Length: 444
Ligand code: 5AD
Ligand code: SF4
Image (cartoon, rainbow, N blue to C red; front, side):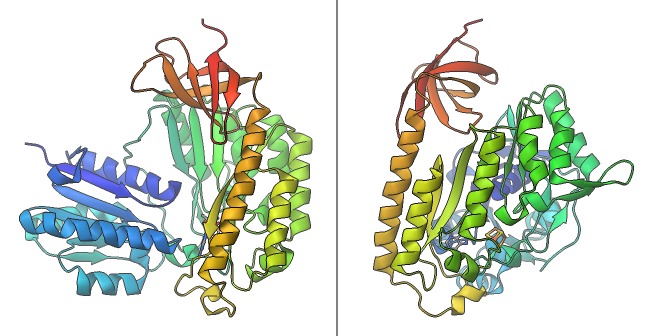
């Protein structure tokens, strides 16, 4: 009987995509996915270290596995991802979870098949973590979670060292993938039926590639090249740092029809003094000016963001600057986070950590403001016709679909059978805070 695997993924799209690669490598070894951990032969947990609650969830999940691992000595438990790049985590695993079979880091994913075979054959415990790496391994197999949408890595790592963030320590220095490799991969994906790609990187705006004639390829040039690929309907990207958003990229929203009218542009705080302590290298006015430029080129652009509440030293006035910025910009939506102390980051040692109850109270006020504005923005779409990439059918009724607009808004709608994987025009009939409702316009 074929061996089976189960992967649990915490964290961002980069991690999701790494898990797709791990699944691709396992499929290459003739493993098949299992819907439940209980009957999998290999269990993999891909971890995130960005906030403390992801740490808790990881150790919680691991705790549940102890019993299963004891009952089934043949089971292999592997853990990987950002948390494995932290020595204190490896030390804790070795001392408190000695039954974990395999630990590998973000720079050694490509060695996973070999490591797994070693663990299986020799029943040894293995740890394979590299601190940083210049190397980009190409051509790893990927088992995609979606037939018509795909993630494409264009760069790895981050050089920005925002003072709260662990990523530069876990994902290493910035390195860009070769432009030709990216174009080749996307062309293959399109041949395979992919309509939408999301370019991934911690800071895609600092992408630096080289063209066929040896010329420098900036992020906007890459978008322009990708836009020329016949059959590719939609290009998205994640994530952008405001300090590196170029005018060329802003113009791409006008010149590249397949670039979706959406940008995720994390602001983190609306207060210039907090932004300075965060080492973000832009101020409140710079951010507002950027949004104005984006809207002058693409008036309908959806703008989403990340905001951290309760950064060390954040005063009520500074927090109010964030609330005012949210009102002023009118974000389509925002991910809101409670500041979480990360070991080894500069902000860990900052004085004036904000008390938990104040953080929570501010967080609730922020969420109320963000949601009120999301609902208002969504309501403006009622009566409009939107292009929607059809992603799935509802379980109860196969003519009720879900999909996303170019502006990344979730739509539930009625449409003809067999619409999945196509881009259809949907008339929006209703809206709420988190989604839109509609009907397909043209039934051909
Ligand atoms: N605490 C809270 N939120 C954080 N983020 C990154 N580090 C932290 C932290 N220490 C948030 C930022 C980033 C998003 C991916 O996670 O908003 O944009
Ligand atoms: Fe972290 Fe800042 Fe880099 Fe984003 S840009 S990954 S927040 S250090």
